[in-house]
Image (cartoon, rainbow, N blue to C red; front, side, top):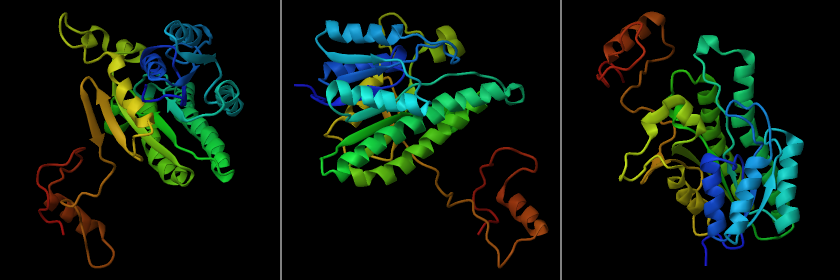
Length: 306
């Protein structure tokens, strides 16, 4: 008996890399899987159903149940067709993994409009459109009195949470995905839906183009960058036994680590009686240990701050 027996899971970007490993694991755990992949290049160009169909054939050969879909996750009509594929083929939807993503790395001053727009379209709009579509499905199920135990797992990135030079477009999209996760969790809980996000650490087409052989495993050692390492925790987030929601987790190798959301710094706070003046702020900030023209906080918390 698998942990996902009878559940129907949609995985976007499932033709290769992490998404492929998700689909294979979920099927082994008893899920019906909608393997969505546009089949494009890592920069978002091109399209082909081949990669998704290959994964479906692997699942079928192992005795699992899956169907391929080549729709565009960032297109509203395409998202509706993806959900309809799950409902028409397997009778419903129980989970969604928003995994589809692309890269067009450039330093900020070299990003053109297309580089910015396409990266946000796939990584952010695609996550929004797919989550909205399954959210609407689960809302209707809930209103009709049907039991709902839905789960969404979004794919953010360390670049989005911590910032990575050369990825302003990608980081902006993935930071927004992390925030969208928290909002969606709060809004969809009334329908019986949980929403979480992961920051995967793994070797994929996207990371290999950036880091090359640096991510290769040494012979005889545990391959901590194997994308298959990420999938078990995602499977847990999708399972009925999981109660987590509104969280973001760093997942890679043998590690799962919760990422705290934005918090107010209790040690660096400036207060005044009434409205600040620029002269007073200049002095207070200098006393608190922030170098003029600097871009980082110095280790001098609390001095001169109230």
